[in-house]
Image (tube, rainbow, N blue to C red; front, side):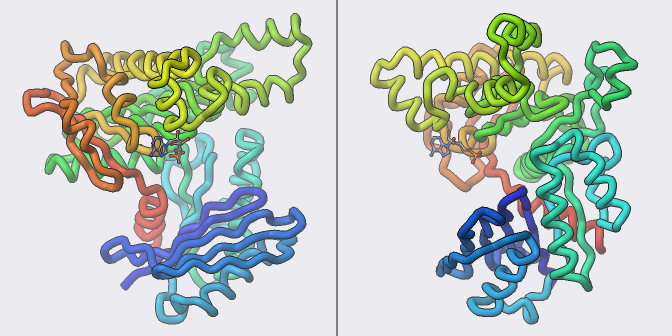
Length: 396
Ligand code: AMP
């Protein structure tokens, strides 16, 4: 029975899941955090039990040692459930990686080179990869890129109308992110509907703290809302999404904001947090219901943008067969799903209010009315399972 270890590393932490591929069952999961920051912490969940430790964790290699200790002490045994591969989440694969790829020294060099495009993400992933390749030296390691699924976009969708020489010199184009989730959800939608993926026009809304929407034609991403970085597109928990770029010039000239201040403004102090002081849709919903105008405006700005993208992607695809919602907000907030598709009845989209309200966490649910031409689904995403599937596909 094949078992795959999935690792998602950042610069000061990593998460892991050991997945048995038959039935795609999680045998154990855990987290090592505060690496290189005073006292670190580990968490290991096996069966119904959770184990926590605190220790100095100077680097990722020490972290992987602690993870191996946790498996040895609390199980499951890695001798019995020996992984056949390790799948690593890597945020940026640039224009070089269009599919999951077995990691060699050369692949590591490429991931390192792409850190220019993802300075907050690729270096951490690489530290995790290096430590994991030492800890699991005898099995293949596979990099699964958030950008890879979107490499199928046509040039007119990924090209910015920016001076060509400048764009080419600095590799500026739309890359798109959340690809692992968009791929997983679009495949699950096809399976749920019992229709071939290759025949479906799909729109997938991944609405978590980060949020993006993708138009998928026949299983291939043809357009997505995140661009050169994960800042573009939808309104997010703390990110602006689309913005007139001249606002940055104005703030530099008039308010003398520095590059770092602008970065923090756009990525950390904007979006729902910037509009209403909170990024959790539960809080915002409760406040809006209690008559809080700021919370209501934040929700309205958020859903206005969702409708704009729904309309644009319906036009790009020439209609849709299925629209899916996933991630924290997409899976849990009926009023956001309803507002996102409001007014699109003319395009054959009708959400059934009762089904929408009754959608249960963790289950695929059809929320469209029986007479809706377009199926509307809520689909729990599972990026770890998708990474494990792709890793296994590469090594088999
Ligand atoms: P994610 O990035 O997919 O983990 O999504 C995180 C976001 O999902 C949070 O910031 C919340 O806004 C939202 N969220 C998660 N669970 C719920 C829930 N039960 N009700 C409303 N919003 C939720």
